[in-house]
Amino acid sequence: MPLPLTLHHILHTTFYYTPTLYISAMAPALTESLPAAPHQLNSNAPRDIFPDGLKTTGQHAPLYDHIREFEQFPKEITGRTAWQPEEYRGQPEKWTHAFNAEEIEELSTAADNFLKAKIPLTGISKKNFPLPNLSKDLETLREDLLNGKGFILFKGFPVEKWGNHKSAVAYMGLGTYLGYFVSQNSRGHVLGHVKDLGEDSTQIDKVRIYRTNARQYFHADDSDVVGLLCIAKALEGGESDIASSHTVYNALAKERPDVLQTLTAPIWYFDRKGETSAGQEEYIRTSVIYLERGENARVYTKWDPYYVRSLSRFSDAGIIPPLSPEQLEAIEVLEQTCQRSALHMVLDVGDIQFVTNSHVLHSRTEYKDYPPPAPRRHLMRLWLATPEEEGGWKLPFWDSNEKKRGGIQVDDQAPVAPLDAE
Image 1 (spheres, helix red, strand yellow):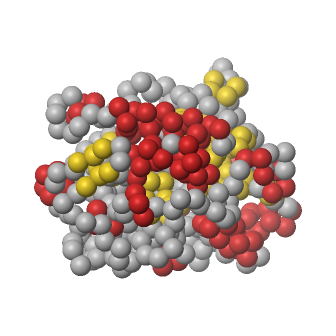
Image 2 (tube, helix red, strand yellow; image 1 turned 135 degrees about the vertical axis):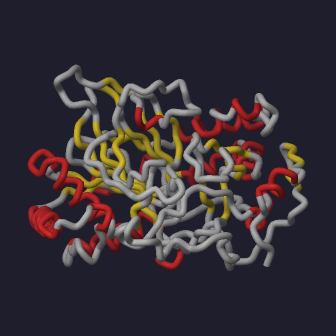
């Protein structure tokens, strides 16, 4: 089986693209198995750096010989993943779960015992955070996240009673039943904080938008599942929208197949915004929409317009091609189609939203915080990985079987779990 393309080969392979066809010197393979990883697997990472023995694999290019041509994509996607917002609007009982007293008590007991054991928060796992009863429901939820509608909103998490530390422990412990937490930035944050730190949102080649109050367009994060726990709300705005990327796919297949084809071609460059390990490139060439490996392949979407629009420093220098008119149109059409297909929700204090990134895109409205001394809008964020061997999607990446696939990892940066934004 051919090995993944080297960076030299990637940058010097000629890709011809028109609205109807893309051709590479490498023909896409339809095999299901993965080649050996290009470097040592991360499942036995040194425990003096990584307390659970697992290292986030980080960002990397896809296996180009596993990228399918447009003609192999489905004409339509059916099933639980291709939902319409009308199915859920005004029917919160279909997608929300209010924690009952027994569930809160179970979470509280597990969190208290974990804190007493003085285990580092980065070492939390199902083994040291037992949920004998709630775990059964979480197993069902995990299946629906990965293979069904792809989202849920928990309500009634007692953050004000517990405070940030115990809330973080209970939240991360809950998350371990859905996936393995991965690093979210170059500083190794496995517990992230969505909060306006006053950074300039117009500097999109340097600034991560979650650290500002700016609008976030529809996108997917660099993990299989993303969790958001609301600690404090904004004065106005900061509301959430989600859309089934399979429903969006169907709309594009029917209305704008040319745009859909543009999104499936490996002609898109994604910025890494300096969060790179030694020797790595500052960008990745990839597709926006993929197919899984193997038979009955599902459609997977990996997208963030901020990471595509921020590369002018390279395109102006002639290092990578600028966005074509077809790509610029695809960006606009994709956003508009997501907006038409969106389900709106508002996160209150104590709400936890879990969303899959494989087939659900999410966005956020611009927001304004309360004036001091009131707390600023604050969401604790988890990025969770679901490896292929544990029911995760068969992705066209070398790390599909890794427990902590995806995320952002810079060199051997140790994981950290700060209790507030920094």
